[in-house]
Image 1 (cartoon, one colour):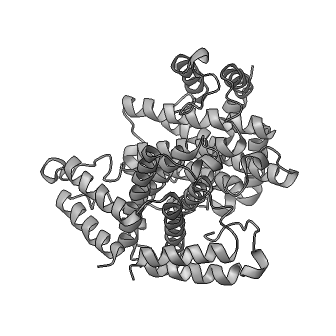
Image 2 (cartoon, chains in turn yellow, orange, cyan, purple; image 1 turned 120 degrees about the vertical axis):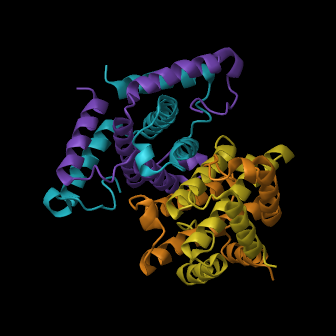
Length: 115
Length: 115
Length: 115
Length: 115
């Protein structure tokens, strides 16, 4: 099964077994996601850009842990708000392709492909 | 193909066509992800928890857009740091199941299943 | 002496004594500030809005600690970028007063007085 | 008058004139603060550390604007939670001085003076 779909089901069961749905309002999940994004920042804040491209194993594991946390809240939040996460992401890439034509933006920092 | 894997490939091609790899250091991607998490917060900051569970179509679309942005940077950051995102998420759920036994935490706000 | 100005001087001396200026680029300080804002979110993420207005002493101390962290990085970042923090804040309030006339927005959630 | 105290009074009057106190729960203010920290990140995310130390006037003004936004929510949140912001910051510096003795950490990236 698709990994996002599998995570969605597993996280739903996880919350139901613990009766945690009451805490998982979209507002609260958005906060939790952003808090995890903050922990991700901590991993990189004092590294140079170069150092950030050459993580040792301990740092890579810590980063992977934070990335997982963000993904879990992302999947739960999409589930609670009725958003199809994979489709939303594909549509965003399609819009970004129109917004940032390769021959016009090549090598120039755009405000970002995910603005 | 699995959606995360498909996104990973599409985002890689997208960045290569634009020569944007130079900007996509893990440090920069972590910042971009957190900035998108901030935009997600904006969608919910003045809503009550109840209102956040009953989004109208315009708000749901805006939320979906921000969730997509977070996912795109998440997939890029995992790709650049050599993290298997799906596996990291499954391992985290397994660890959380041990950390928060259902019969002990039922109905109590834990610090979070993704801490 | 004004508290912001005193903090600015104390933080400058603190960093100089430790030769930490090399780490304190504006980019890094912005990341550190956002990471602290994430820790602040953690304090509130599972509380109801009502609970957040009635903090017990332990929680208030923890919140105060995170607020202090944000302020320290804010003062350092303003210092490193040549921004007069107090003046910028007063100018922002003045602009917000024009943007959100009291008789037009009374009782309605604006996008925020600090957008 | 001290700038923080002046801001506190001005922001209180601003919210009262607009009947916005109802939206300004500590939970909501923490979200708004973190959202502004996200906007601050956007200003720096594609800059190199070097570029971030040499901002042009337009960028400095944009950064100053975001710093002001963070400070306004910080002052409001401290006011609503009964935290003395200046005192909390001074106490934090004192604790950090003990935690990071200059002769031990000189030139080494600590996890941060505001952790």
